Image (cartoon, rainbow, N blue to C red; front, side, top):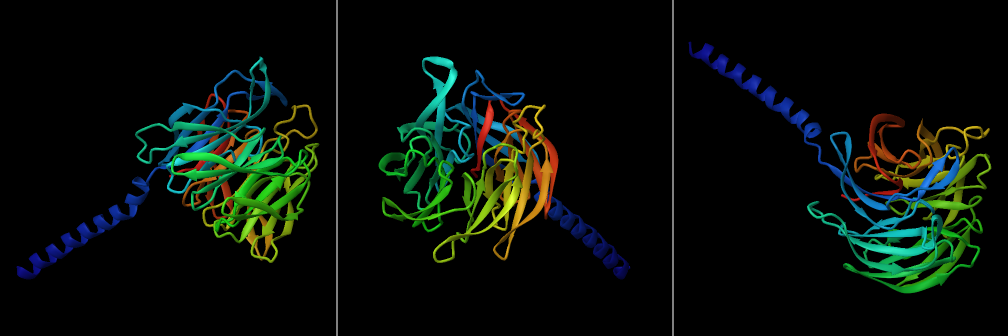
Length: 393
C-alpha cells in the first residue's frame, strides 16, 4: 500500500513538473516585451502615377508599438519633418530621453502648393514609461536642407548634414539643452546627405550625393575637420556604421534613370579607412541599416516603384538583406512589395523589420528567419508619408 501510494505521488509530481516546464517554454512568446519605434511622416509628400504631388496633411512624429507580432500607433504629435533626403532624419540620444528630428523642406509660406528648403532641427523629450507623449522643447536653425542627423554615444555632440547649404552643423548636447556650436563648410555643390559617428566618437562619415564622395571627419572635442575623402559610387546617399565600428555601408543613388545602382562597404579598421567592396542593389537604394548584431545589412530599394506605370523601369519596391563575409557584401534574402520605400528598423532580436512604404502611407512588418524575408501581412496606416524610422526602446 505504501509503495502504491508512493508511486501515485511520483506520477502526480511528474505530471505537475511537465506542466510547469511546458508553461515556462511557452511563456516567453506569450509575454514577449513590446518594442517601440519613432517614425516621422511628411504631410506634403505624395505620388500620383510617378509624379510628385503636394498633399495637404500634417507632418507628424509617431511612436509605433510592436507587440505580439502586431503594429499600432501608440502616440502621435504634430512635428515638422521631411521625406526629402535619406531616411535618417531622427537621432536618439543614449538613454532614450531625447531625440533630434530634422526638416529639410516645408510648405512655401507664400504658396501652400509649393515646397521649399527648410533648416529646422527639433529637440524632443521622450518619456521612457510611455505615459507622456513626445514633447518639443526647442527648435534650432542649422542650414538649408537639414537632412541626416546623428548623436555620438556619449550623448554630448550631434552632427547635421545641411544638404542644400553644403555644410555640417555641430550641435552641443547637454541633457535637454541643444545648441549650435559650430559649422563645417563642404561646398555649395557637395550635397551632404547623412552624417554618422563611429562608436568612439572620434570620427564620422558624410555621404555627399552632390559631388559623389564620402568625407571622413576627424572630431576632437567640438572641433570637426576633414581627414580624407573616399570614393564609392555615383551619388552616395544613405549611410550606417556597424555597432562594433568595424564597417560602414553606403547606398549609391545613381542618376535615377532606370539603371541598376549599388551599395558599398567601407572597412573602418583599415589604416586609413577605405572602400573595399561595391555590389549591385537595384534601382535607387534608399535607406541602409545594420542589424542589431552587425551581421546583416538591410536596404530599401525603390526599384522604379516611384515611376509612372507606363515607364519601362516601373516595378514594385524591394527590401533586401546582405551579409558581410571576408570584407565582401553577400546578397541574401529579399522581398518585393510596396512603393517608394524609405526608412526601416530591425526589432531588437533582429527577427523582424519595420519598413516604411511612403506611397501607400503605411509601415509594413516583415519577418526574418536566417536569410529569408517574409511578409507578416501586418500594416499600420498613417495619414502622411513615413520618411524615417528608428528603434527607441
